[in-house]
Every structure is written in C-alpha cells, then in structure tokens.
Amino acid sequence: MYPLDLVITRLQVQAQFKSDSAEDDGGGDEDYKDILDAVRKIYAKEGGLPAFYSGIAQDLVKSVADSFLFFLAYNFVKSSRQAKKADAKKALPAFEEIAVGMVAGAFSKFWTTPVQNIVTRKQTASMVAARDRSASVSAELGARDIALQIRDEKGLRGFWSGYSAALILTLNPALTFLLHESLLRVLVPRAKRADPGPRLTFLVAALSKVVASSITYPVSLAKTRAQVSSTSPTDTAAEAEPLQEKEGNTAATKQTKRAGRATIFSSILEIARREGVAGLYQGLGGEMLKGFFSHGLTMLMKERIHVVVIQLYYLILKALKRYPSPQELAAQAQEEMKEAVEVGRELVGSASEKLQDAMEKTSTQVGDVYGKSKERAAELVRREGGKQEN
Image (cartoon, rainbow, N blue to C red; front, side, top):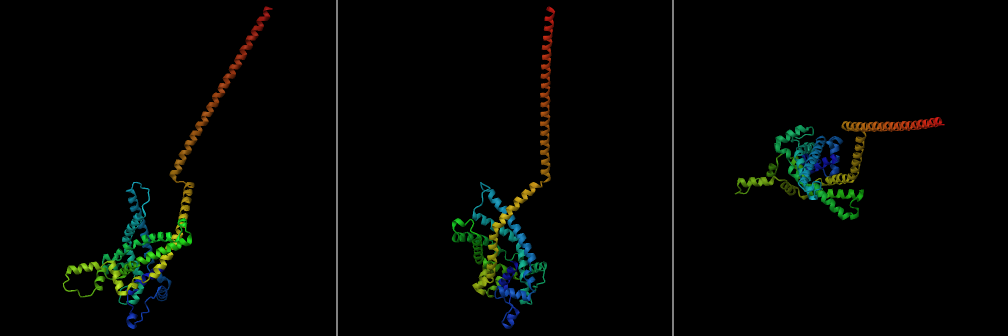
C-alpha cells in the first residue's frame, strides 16, 4: 500500500506548489488530474517503480515504532484502569476501550510525528523540485538533510507539524468501530452476526473504514500540508489574512487573532476558502481505495490469523514439553531419584518380609520335627518297658 500512500500524499499537497510551466503557458502538465494520471506521470518522469518507494525505509521505522509504542501505552493504561476496578479481570466497557486507544495513539504519535514529517517530505521531494526550481528540496536529499532543513525552516517545533491533526485522527479507529457495529446491525441478521461469512465481513469492514476516512479526510489533508510547508503554522496563517488591519486593533488583539488562526481547524477553513470545499477532498479516492482493501482484508484475515496464532501457541507448548528446560530437567531428575529410592525401599522391605517368612517356616518345621521325634522316642521307651515286663 505504500505506493498508493505516496500518490495520495502528492494529490493532497500539489495545490500548494505551482508549476513553472503553468505560470509560463497556463497549461501545467505537471499537475495530477487523478490517481491514474499521477501514477502514469510519476512512473514516466521519475525513474519507474523505485520512485513509488521514496521514503519507505523511514516509513518502516515509523510504523514499527508506532505499533510498539501504541501497544506499550495501551497495555499500561488499560491495566491501570482495570486495577482501579473491583474486578481487575473484567473487561473494560467499549467507550473506555476507545478512550484508552486514543490516549495510546496520542502517546505513540508524539514520538513518531518527527519521522512522519521526514517521510512526507521524502514522498513529495521530486514533485516539489520539478514545480519550483527555486526550492531547496531535492529528491537526492537524505533523511538527515531533510531533518536539518526542517530545523532551519521551523526550528525544533517544526518536527511536530501536524501533531494536533494527528490527535484528531486518533478518532478514526473509534469511528470505524462504531460504523462497523452499526452496519452489522443493519446488514446482517442477529443470528449471523457472530460469523457473517467472508464476503459480508470484508464488505462491512471496508465500508466502515471508507466512511470513517471520508469524515476525517480534511484533517488528514491539512496535516499533510502542514508537514510539507516550509513556514511555521503561525506564519502561514498570518499570510492568509489581508495585509492591512482595521484601525483600532491593538497589538494584543492581533496576536490573539494570529494564535487563533494557527489551529488545524483554521487551516481547514482557509483551504475551503481558497480552493472550495472540493479542495478538502483532493486525493480522497485513493484514500478510500486504500482503506477499502487494507481494512477489509485485515478484518477478513483476522479470524484466520487468530486460529493460526493459537495453533502455533499449542505447538510451542508441545515443543517445550518435548524439549524441557535445564530447570525442568533437574526437577525431573530429582523426581526420578525419589522414585528410585522408593522402589529400593520397597524391594528391601519385601526381601526382609520374605526372609522373615522363611525363618518362621523353618522354625515351624524344626519344631514339628522335634515334636515328632520326641513322640517317637517316648513310644519306643514305652515299647521297651512293656517287653521287659513280659
């Protein structure tokens, strides 16, 4: 999806940069009319397929860091919330889950927004260089050069351009979730909601993401424009207003108005004033296409991935039981020693019992022989005594 993301970014910001050819002959062949036109021109003029992957290394770093920080904050906040409840094992309500997700998203975006600024500039560098020959932007600039450029143009605060918009965009997953549940109730009978089937799962997930992205898209567009702009938000907002102020306005009033104009919402209103409402949705088709397939396929594959993860879990358990750890081997050896001692004791005990039985039998036999011998001797004495009397 990265090539499509690059095309969307260029469609969002192209109105900010006037083509030199457009000023000379009024044509402006550099402008992208739609997604397909942008793909064709990027491929033809910027070196083929590699042009669609400009900035992908930095984007991968951002994505990994974003996911890690999000789940780190999510688990911490969620466990903290559960610890305060009477039943710590009970799941949080849906609205609390959404709130926890938004807090985790705000935390992760705080650390990854500087990298996102670099990625956005990498994605648009070739387009800006082709349209504005006086610009210091070049497709050959590396991530370090772009970071230095941002610092020189905006200062350290420039690395967090668009962060306020990113905070608003943390609502997008919540909107997607709510729309997903609403579409399930509308399109799927209650008996099939637990397992609506692959087609309905894909369709409901894709539609919910498309609608949610359409609602938040103007904020996304304003964020992207803030990140490629070479001026700070306050300066940009000030340039949008007439140069002459009404008489009677104090310096404090002017400063308050300027601070009020330097918000993401004022940027959205300014884009609508200059380019019309349609200007807020430049590149929306690509965003809808990306959301339709990415979220739809994610939800479609979620259950299968869940099953695969469970199967791998049990395979690992079996492998660990088959190949025990050193501690388990030591414990197993101790158990075997105990069993061997018990068996030895049983053998010794049984042997002593057998010896005792043999001795008892021997003594009994000896007693019997002695008794019989005594009786025979007495009988012989009686017989001899009878003979003498006769």
